[in-house]
Length: 482
Length: 135
Image (cartoon, rainbow over all chains, first blue to last red; front, side, top):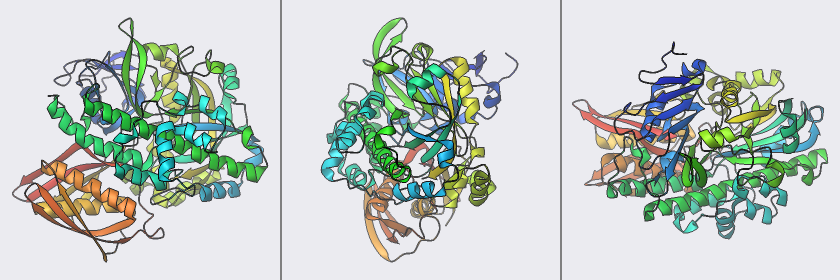
């Protein structure tokens, strides 16, 4: 096990576990720990390890600065980073949440099977037409300034009450689809101005809507409880809080930069700007962040509605026959109760490119899933498999109930554009039976399968470590890229 | 115009070289517009932005964040920016055109301008800047 040294100063502590000892950089209060195989360790950037060590310097951090196997170089926290902070000494930082607050993913099932939809270009074309995507896209569902407030305060609940979903959807969203701490007073007029025209839009970059087929079931009991069966057609949606959340991060980062000085906090990276959780600046950011998270849940609910309408019309299936499996946030900070050094305590968990993975009997699970654990949805890169897993007690004990969020990039966008042609990738995927629609070719090259770690390798590590367990594998048949 | 994209795994990292601070800011704005909308951008429509901040790095971040905001909510794509620095602030005279889905859809959305690794340095040859856009 000791044979391979990943990065100078990083210690191997298990088959898939590595530790960054205190002292790796000055000011670390706790060690860093990340979960990664030796093979994936070979593509890990020094910058990502440095960023995880930076997180370990933040005031009030508990246990370890953690990173999941999709760890890569981001800004502030590394992508895949998780950290919990004590309520009395801890901080809140937008660097641990990101610009795209509550970027997340959801999956709903349909009564259709693979044979019903294979080769149906018209379905993918119709979804591409109905769901606004890409730069400059505006919503076709009219959001008024008043409904914007509903989105920010009640999240997915607002959307369902407005006719964009089924009541049962809410029980299948993390936190019931909204954070009660939302305070839209701290969302600036600028952020609101950006939020109005974008409700119900997908965005661009790695955001997508994908039609998928369940190809493999690893855990029949859990799959049944989640409503998944072999050959079934599902729809996965990946997007976030759009310009509203981006502006909230931009605005509060500026305030928190000053707060960092005011509260005499020393930081190794300005993007980690933060304030004590109980300070006015910290509370205001938390309220605005929660409002943005709610906007994101409402947004994914609205896109779900549009997709269900298209499917309902084209295949004569009832809207009600397309229930939500689950909706998870992967860029967010939350107050949760966890065991720390043998004691239960309330902490503030930051997840930056990491998914909540609550185990059986954890709070916030719907009664019918209490024995199974929370569904965890891990999107693959374009054209590759996505996975449904379930949360575990090991995650509760070791990672503050967290797991990976995706496959993790290994190639920069500039390299991808130089090396890969969007047109060729789209035709290669079509040969494999996957139809891709995107606003432009770059959007396809940017997100080609080769630029990510194989999603299979990433989920196998979290499964082996036990911080979530494999339930099902889904493969794409049609992709709408943002 | 002198900027290049340097490899960064998740996001877009830009390096800019310029003789003057005004040109450095102007080129950083051009880089941002290029990432968002591609290279086909024309002038004609004018917009003035005023920003002030405590240091050059914050001034640049706040300026680009404001350009991002104006561009999105007013549906404008900028071809150029004439920058005048004064004390702790700047005035930017932006020159652009309305967003056209046909011509301006080759880019990707920028979610924010990061402080991570943001550094403006100065030597005998002029100024250099590294900046990260979250995409």
